[in-house]
Image (cartoon, rainbow, N blue to C red; front, top):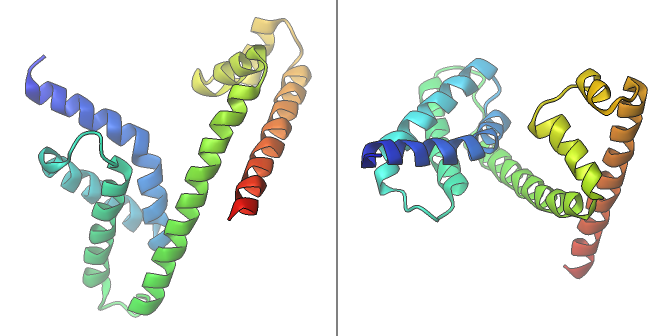
Amino acid sequence: MDSNSRQTEVFLTLLMTNQRRINSFILSLVPNFNDADDIMQETITVMWRKFEHFQIGTDFAGWGLKVAYYCILNYRKQKSKDKLVFSENLFQQMKEVAQAKQDQTDERIKHLRRCIGKLKTEDQRFLKARYELDCNARNLALQMNRSIQYIYKHLARIHHTLNRCVKQAVRAREAFE
């Protein structure tokens, strides 16, 4: 594999892992979905153009959020002639709230991964089949020789267990702060 192919593969892998987070950040600051999509495309384009300057092993998502932020600023500059553009002060407040929410989400995802690791092996396999392999309830029911109602109830129990576990982990962390 040549170095260009390798670089493309690394970029795409990092992007696919972090794209949802970057897009969520953009959507939290841009009121129009079409504009947010355009900004996401611009962000990806800029990231790809500047990828050779990115140091592998550092925070790709953080870098992507900074690129997205500057693309949003550029968007705001272009839209400043419109009457519905937020003031700079309000925009900064929204950015801070969006970043705090993103940090909370990241923390919850870490707790969720730990909580999934605490589940019984069969429940972990069940979740993997449902969400990673995208197997719907009907197919799971057929594979497991169970009713669809059983699948939904089993999923609900697992979700409840995971929700309780994540909430306990968040409360425990808040107690130490």
